[in-house]
Image 1: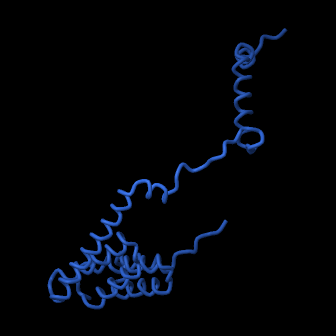
Image 2: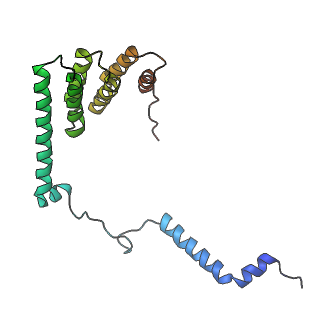
Image 3: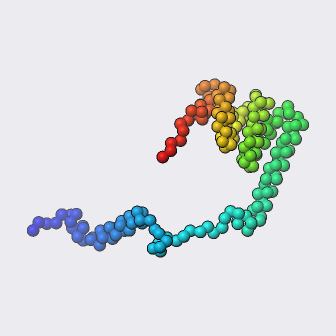
Length: 184
């Protein structure tokens, strides 16, 4: 009789590991392929512990925090607006208008008002050094509003305002001519 090979000796001496490995692989494959059903007792129905509304009503402090934050944001916007109206030629006026737009967008989710502020900024302060960001934020506001035509117009204006070799021009170009997302 021939001498067993190394692989045959390893399998013979460790047969229990091979059986265990096959059993684990079979169990994992079964769990992946066979969907659990409620009838066979394997699946546990998932019910949410609480909804966000229930959490908010259970924790009125969280709701009052949100309202307080919103009121503070609106108050800050009004302060900026008052300073701009008092002296529209002030050096900080464009920065305040930009801050208002940012507050509307980020804190209040009011993209329409944010876009309005950005439009005023572009119209009233065309030489402000922060305009590089304004075009981007304006386009994003219009995108969030679902107004693709206005977003494209903002990116076209951005391309008109900056030289072809600039990052701003390249960004606007990518936003205008990006491929549509593939649907699978």
